[in-house]
Length: 481
Image (cartoon, rainbow, N blue to C red; front, side, top):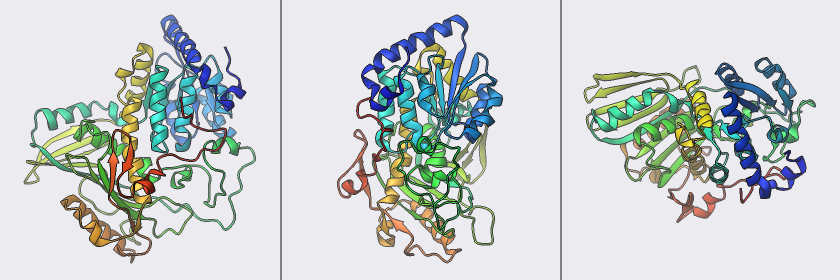
């Protein structure tokens, strides 16, 4: 059975259930026959290249399909699958009956629609973080995985690091440091300006720009290059919060909160874009308070060096990319691949050593596909949706902001928040920027209906408009999956 291109465009969901059943039977039959999983890659850029290196070396895997709207990206990926079929249009790959599962490493704005289309066509999905570009489409992706009984893993690979189980045992079962009182998350990593043009960027004629845009709006681009720097444009990216924030917040949800908090109940965020004067829209300095109902959480992000003459990130408590759990009997600092516990006097209690979770996370996906069992996944789509949701809402907390108001910020009586604001004041002060600078904004305190995944109360109307994007036909996430 082949699904026509026209059916995709006009909404083929009416027959998707039967297609999914056929796809499931086909994948199961092949797994029973020779245990080979034929993978198709949607997006063949940098992160996809890393996945290709891993998946191509795992037993029982064949790189069967490569897809990217940029033919140059496909050429670079062919070394991992010399006889792989190739497409510039992902719908061709998704329609192909010989592809069992897809790995989605396209731009953020494509993640959910590509995943939904693939699952409707009976394919299992490994989709890169952040799962969604907006909260509503993440919910739709979870719904599709459940409706079509698909295995859907999200690429927060640190979930597959065995170290995480040791950390949770140490913190929550043994309770060596006592009860956790509060937590802080950091992402401090220097990035360069993306430049600004006086005329729109000219797109390479070999690239299918319509397919690259997909669900995003067709707007002129004034940055210096098309690829990667789409992260800093709200039309296609989620800023540093969605790019790296999702990793460190996922670690917090996993190890500190044991995934018991799907979304914060209240939040306030601020920040701005400073120094570079480029075409980017997302903040390069971002700070957010999150009320979980139990453990208060703050997160600080910056892409600027410590000062104009520095090359390194500003100093902050704990790891530059990681989290701190402040406990009764000390503190716990975790980051990708390592962690350390300190007592109240600052003496090391225990060190933890791990890995990035790479290879193990991809193998975890394959194991779940072969077993037809999503419960085996270390980052099932619902877990990935929840962690991404913290980032989506944190971005909204910033985007609903107005001029920074110190009195309003100081109404949050949490020591970690006060410390973070002081650090941000010093950090921006190195560039001659004050917290009251016109470029710095602070959002209102937003309340969240966790079950509905929407804002409620004052300012809800202003914030809820960011929960769902405007899609560009025919690349529309369906209302009913």
